[in-house]
Length: 318
Image 1: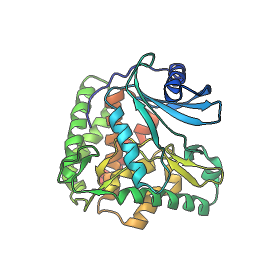
Image 2: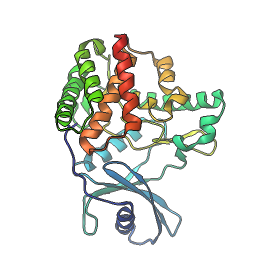
Image 3: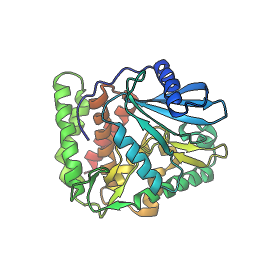
């Protein structure tokens, strides 16, 4: 993963809807798109749901940064092949073309809504939440059953050890964080927690993972879809998927409302935990959020502050 600031092409929600209607004509020149609805986006992506006159519904995703198309399409197809939980099929992909200034692809719509918005699931009984967690972990475990002899990016895994693979990335993130701190963009509490954690890197990652496994990379409650019966209906939006330590797929479970469902605890209960699992998850979480800030320039205190505090707590226990 490149650790550098990315200047995205500006695509507003209104722009994305316009581009989706143009893309729909490219996808189905014989059918009329009767509705296009913006459904969300992050730092580098915009998603639009398009409905055609015959009732067909598809999702168009527009990539606001270059060099993302090949990997996103490859990873979606790879994960779909290996996951027992439904994931969207990629139907076609295109580089930027006339009237659409960014790369994009069209994919199947997964029915349901993100678990984050399911209030009945959140406030429901412990049994319902446990059933949800069990379904999530079963699906994630199916992805983790796909292994590789090497660690690294799904397209080109080249590392013989996870410590080497992740250590190279983590050091690059820390170097960029130091630059941003010197420039006044990153706070002292964040960089202090990172420095202290980095000094303990060899202790935290003393135990090597036994196997490089396929990970989703961003499996949080916003990317887990549930149906009207509060059952898991799909996983969406993988990010930076790779062959990695299986526990690298768990730190997102602690974000947003994930703690409520004890997703990480359920995974550990089913598959066991490494000796420093909680320290690793704290490290992974903080480094990922700083990495996102390095790339996008957007810092979200609501997410960052708890990660810093958790890392500080883990350091005190080491």
